[in-house]
Length: 418
Image (cartoon, rainbow, N blue to C red; front, side, top):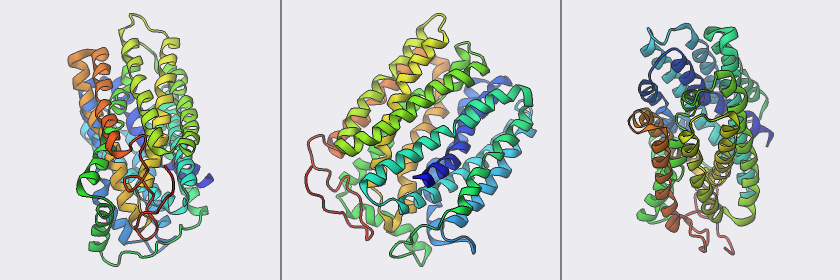
C-alpha cells in the first residue's frame, strides 16, 4: 500500500500539470478558451499509449530490472521536460510550448504503462486490487495539489520560469521511490518477440468471452465516466470565468474538490469490497451523474460565492471518488497478469480517452452554448455508460467472465456465489 502511495504521486503530478497549471498559465497570459481547449489535444498520448506498451513488455534496460529501469528513465525525462516549460512566452511561443507539453504527456503516459503493470503485479487478491488501486488513485489525486494548488499560489511571487522548476523538482519523489522498491514478481512467461508482446494481450482478452461481450466491456470503459470527464474538463478556466482569483482557486476550490474525492475513493473501496464491483458501479454511477448538475446550478447564479462553489465541488468530487474506486477495481479485474502492461494500458487508455476528447472540444462548446447548457450536456453524456451496465455488470447477475480477475495463466478464476 505504501508503494501505491509513492507511485501514485509520481504518476499523477505530470497529468495535473497539463490539465490544471498549463491551462491556467495560458488563460492568464490571454490565450482564448477555444485555443486552450484544442491545446489539450497534447494529452492524447495517454489514450494512445497502448500502441507502444508492447515495447515495455518485451524490452528492458540493463539496469534496475524489467519494470524499475523504465520507471527511472521516464521519470528523469519528465524532470527535464517540465523544467523547460517556463522559459517560453505563450503569446509568442505557443507551438513550442505545445511541443514540450506533448513530450511531457508522452513521457508521463509511458511511465503510467510501467507503473500500472508494476502495481498489478504486486497486488493479488480482490481486496488488494480494490484497496491498492484506490490508494494509488487517491495519491494520484493528492499529487494534483502540487501543480493545481501550490503551482497557482507560487505563480505570482516566483514567476512561471522558476515555478515550473519547482514542479519538476517534485518528480524526484518518484525517482527516490523507484530506487528503493524491489522489482515486481516476473510473470510465468515473458514475451520473447515483439510479435508475441503485441498479439498475446488481445488474444487472451477475447478468449474469455464472445466478441459482442468483449466489445461491450471496451465500450463501457470508454463511456462510464464520459459525462463526468466532460463536466470537469475545463474546471480551472470555469472558476476563472466565474470571477474567482487564482489564489482563491488554489486555496479553496482545489481543496474542496480534493478531499471529498479522497474520502469518496477510500469509502468507495470499502463499499466495493462489501457489495461487489457490479453493484458499486451502478450505485456510484448514479451519484456521479446526478452531481454533474450542481455545476449547471452554480453557472446560472448571478454572483456565486466561494461557499456556493465549495458545496458544488464537495458533492461532485465525492461522486468522482466513488466512481473512480469502482472503475479502477473493474479495470484491474479485467487484466490478466500474463499480459498486464498492454492490457492495462489499453483499458486505462480507453478510460482516459473521454477526458481528452472532452477537453479538446469543451472550449468550443462552452463558447457556443454557455457554461450552464454545457453542464446539462455533460449530464446527458453520462447515460450511455449506465445503460451498458445492464450487459457488462448486471445488478443481480454473477460477476462471471465479464468481470472476474484473470489468473496468472490468463484463464478466468472460478468464483462461488454472486
